[in-house]
Image (cartoon, rainbow, N blue to C red; front, side, top):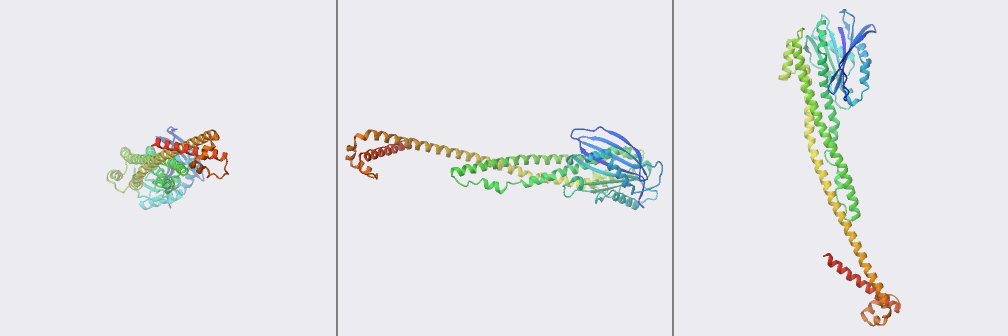
Length: 450
């Protein structure tokens, strides 16, 4: 059977505090009997900069009874943990500020245990928690305990809380070793925080990358807008308006693109900082273990030192730092390198649209001014003609005989389809005079314009 002595179940929970830091606090939980098990525990909160950490621990407390308990007791312990008031409060926190959570199982192995039975107990305990299909890492020794890490990393990056699972099983050889856990609770809190922040910062980059890829180049529709479809004034104005709309839209996209690209760089910095802190916390824990009265496994200390400096794969912590964490870091670096040219493309494109808009505005304004000048000129010419014709009509009423006697004028007047009369002569002569005056005015304006 898979059994443990003094079984404990811990839950580490992390979320951004948004400037509202919670003080460090340790609170004991009174004993309560649940389905025949006397269960007690404690809560520990710790501020970690911009993040608040919570550690809730429940255990089967039956005094000095060293009788092994079946790992199924973790079902009751998990129920108590999830129902704890502080854990329930974190469940109501907005998803975007949740960083992650880690389960930890603690216990003392029965006296008859061996490596195979320890692995079996760890696997069975992990299965009881029902946290999904997690992959077990290689066992490692720490402070005399055998440690197993179970992980499931996100694949789709759509729901970090649901896709990211993490469990650590620490199986101690005796009760004295188990009691050393309290000396390391702050270290575990910090270590897992750094781990989750590496994953969290990478998850923040995934939707941003999709946006940047989508807007890496302007759309074909925007390119079509830049084509001048007609030199006609009304169509030129309509095309200019479309260009202004395209300029506004692409300026907004440029701003978003630059902002999101900067956001990628910020997240990369966050990832690298927490990866470094994770490794440094491991070194600190190893140094602290060397100073404890319960002698840690010397091989573990040497192994951890090798992990940090020689990149060996014999430690479960290295499985995270060497594979997922560095993969995430390299991926974000590659994303930034690949997507940065898009910013320059966007800047050039916006500058091009702005230049075209300025040119087309100048052309449109010039066309409007030319149209207005042409209209004013036409009005002036027609006005001169009408004025001249009116004056000639008034003055020529008494000179109809002289007008009729002039062969060229009389020939031109006869073009008017009216019967011969004095009115026809006066009207025709005034029209000829007005037309001649308008022509002369047009010649003068044309001469002055050149």
